[in-house]
Length: 231
Image 1 (cartoon, rainbow, N blue to C red):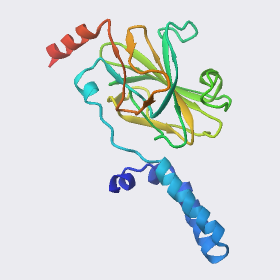
Image 2 (cartoon, rainbow, N blue to C red; image 1 turned 90 degrees about the vertical axis):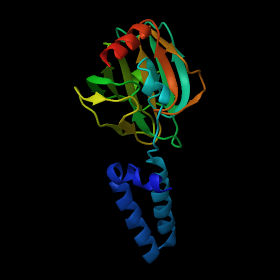
Image 3 (spheres, one colour; image 1 turned 30 degrees about the vertical axis):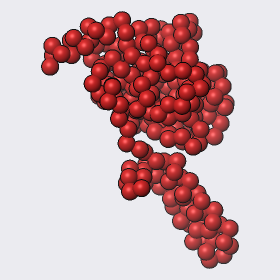
Image 4 (cartoon, one colour; image 1 turned 180 degrees about the horizontal axis):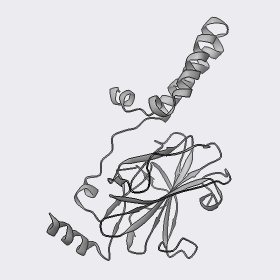
């Protein structure tokens, strides 16, 4: 319970909500109790929404070929050998985050941020396939030490109107690091090259920074050997 309070992102990314909750509560206690109850509900729900649990994937920690899921939620779509993705990517895993899921976004692999690209757009329901291309979104491209690139896409939904990205080009991120969040219902897509073996399935509930999403297969043995030699 203490960690829920101390690690909570509400104190740094939801101060406006905290202030509004206090104002509503005090006004309600003085004038109309309904506002007090609503202010208390708003605060407690926001405390739940902005929770930031500690996550770790031991498999990824010990194996540089492992990719972890970038977000909590349900896998709503898996595309393989897709032809409509950006150059270098032929696979896509889409994770839908309801308002009840943890909304922090985590890095699937250890690597350097090569690009951060924001694009304005619509606010369709985030579980719809077209939302990946038409909705407001933020893309980050991460390149690991072996030159392997992946793209993680934060997508705003009908309720979610605020994408937060706390990383920038050139920054080194570790597997499982928190780099952003999307507020109040959203979607996260991860675009992958052909040499990734996807290990999640459609409709599976996954957990960011903890569930294994897949692994590099074609160059994995060479990569691990290089890692041992450098050590």
